[in-house]
Image (cartoon, rainbow over all chains, first blue to last red; front, side, top):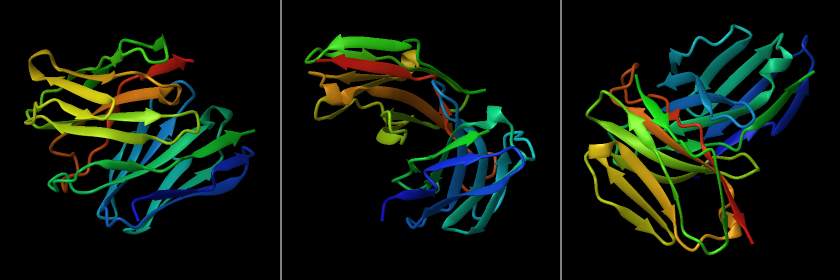
Length: 115
Length: 120
């Protein structure tokens, strides 16, 4: 299995809702990432988990809460979002860079609309 | 700080023409990785190539080729005999080493992307 699976593919939520994005990989990768991509912009790094521990938080507002329950799963919990948070949320995973096949595999993303 | 510059915002060519997408990067590290990704309208990022800083060999994969030149900090991407299916946004990206967290986990810094339009 060489995929990163993200669910749901589309999500519409109100500003008072609580929702979660899910990401799963079974490639044995020990690093997982959340990126946010606004329209016509490049992906921007939000969070990095390494060996199931949060290692990088790029000053993301607390209304975004990541969680890594195990080495295959990554969640992004959403609460009290704003319309400007509407974007494509991409999950990725990677092997340790010391591996010869180091690289990043991306999921197809969740298109989030906040109304 | 690391930076990736893709100066071409949009390129439009007629099918079967060759096209080159430029990428210039900045980094203080001597060990780093460069990537190219393709993003079709559906949104997923499709991996095209990875190159580490110690490997300056150019690479060819079918109609795709990459020219890595450390002397000019460039990693350009050429599509030969372009096809309509090549239409997409192409991102060049950089990953430095070591990662902030150790264990080899570090995020990618992307260029702004080049929107390639191949007209039939």
